[in-house]
Length: 185
Image (cartoon, rainbow, N blue to C red; front, side, top):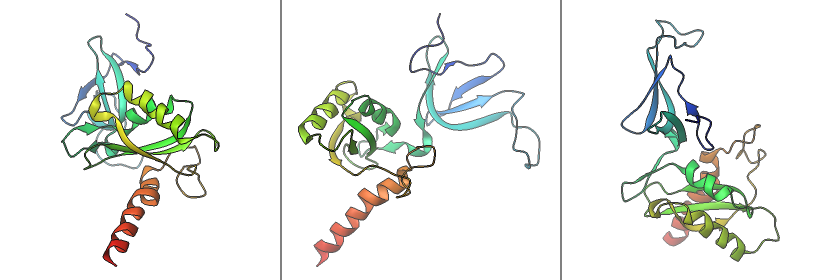
C-alpha cells in the first residue's frame, strides 16, 4: 500500500497514535511528546493539534483545515473553508479567495481574479467547476470580486498566509454595518 498519496499527509509514525475528537480535531497521543521550553509540569501524553482531519482504512492521514476556521451553516453542517478554497484555487481564473458562511444558509466567497481584465462570466464558470467537485452543502452559492489581499492592508502575513479574520472585517462585517446604518436612516 502506497502511503504518499496526493492530498494526504501520509501514515502516522509507528510510535504515535492519532485519534479523531468529537469535532473532527486530530489528537496525537504518545509517550515522547514534547512541551514548550518554559512550561512547567510533565510532558503531555496527548496534544490536540487544532487540525481537522481523518484517517482512511489504510491508516493514511489527511487534513481538511483548522478547527478555529470551521464554519457551521444554518443547517448545522460543519464545513472547513480551506477545503472549499482549495477547490476554488485549482481554477486558473482565481488568484485568491476566502470562503465564509458561519450561520448562513449557504457558503459565499470573496474572490480575487487571476488578472484584472477577466470578466465575471469566466470566474462564474470557474466557481461552477469547483462546485461540481463538492457536495451540495459545501458549494459556493454567491461570490463577489474583491481587490487583491495584501500585507499592506494587514490581510496577508509576511509568508503569504491569508488573515481570514481581517479579510472578513474588511469585506463582510463592515459592509453589514454600513448596510444596517443606511437602512436605519
